[in-house]
Length: 102
Image (tube, rainbow, N blue to C red; front, side):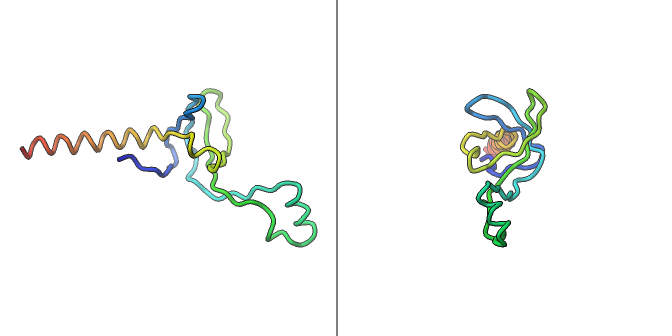
């Protein structure tokens, strides 16, 4: 069974576009701020401002551009090719061991 977590160096594919990315970090928490949030900061309520969300820095293989993606928007569209490959390798090893037992 492939893992669900994303690790630094994992190869990812966007299932909508087919574009391939390489994870350049582990998943981390990022604070997103809009104009209303900056206004709150100006009035001394900065600790209540912003939206905290899981994010991931990725490198687009096609154009070489590194960007941070919001996992809330992307998670259902990302396929972790590295994890899938690890899962297939593990399953093949288990099948070989089972054949030796019989």
